[in-house]
Length: 174
Image 1 (cartoon, one colour):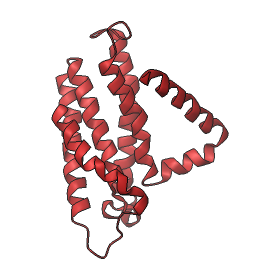
Image 2: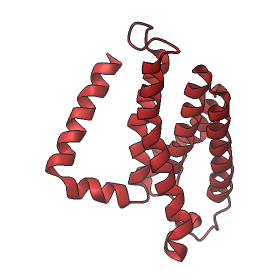
Image 3: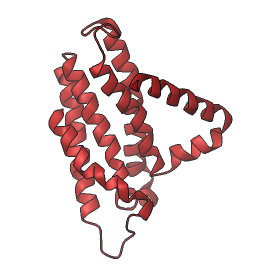
Image 4: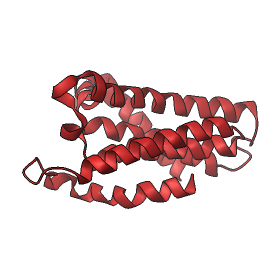
């Protein structure tokens, strides 16, 4: 059922990309919206880990190819997200654009670490785990060390505070 829902949502998003490319481009450039692009890849990796052996046999070439197809977009989004923090200068410093939704990229790194460990790639798992922990520490300090007069989190983003619990949980699983 989860796979059917994921495929349906993927088809609908592909149609959105075809018919409303300008809105998708705005999502990719937005400092909050870009974080939600991690969600489909995270759910695919979790589905890959829980799939029956008949779908993608464990330890096979197909599992490795599927892993790479799902992790490369996470790596590209990480580079885009971290790159905009370092390259954009004073317009996009981390203290201004960090929000609780930024933890989705951290969770994606932990899921990729968990998936690579189950495939037997311990070095790759350690790399993703270390990247997730480093990003989480920087993000955690940034979100909690804001000045009282700075921009708070908008009321629309209040449900995203649940990610403060989800990120350490996924780290402990990874």
